Length: 154
Image (cartoon, rainbow, N blue to C red):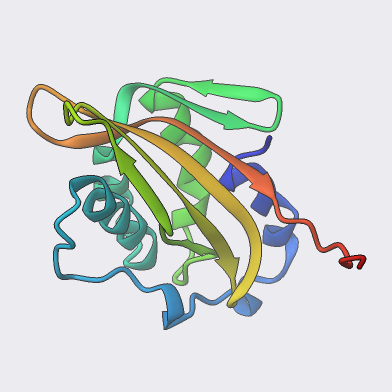
């Protein structure tokens, strides 16, 4: 399954002027009481605010982001691949969690939700989060899946 990056490669072929972030999924500033949801919203906000350095702080040193059939292993590889999404003045896509779970011991969490381009649903992401020694939540696994644009039978 492709990640947010792989899913959006074809989308990024569009002119950058046509790619605009919408406010419908803008990350909320207020804490939600769920530390993984809060981390995911803050992570997504780095794209909206074009803050690549802050984005990198959410990626674990040993993270694995799946890009199609090509795993990106380690923060350095992930950041090298994602840098291009921060080059323009406008975010090429946005995401927000619609389901978040945290293990009872508070060490691992999972978040998933829609990825949108100009308000159109194009994919779903899935991220595994780990609470690290410094207390911060960081993404350790990231993947995504295409959204079917199928007609429902019935």
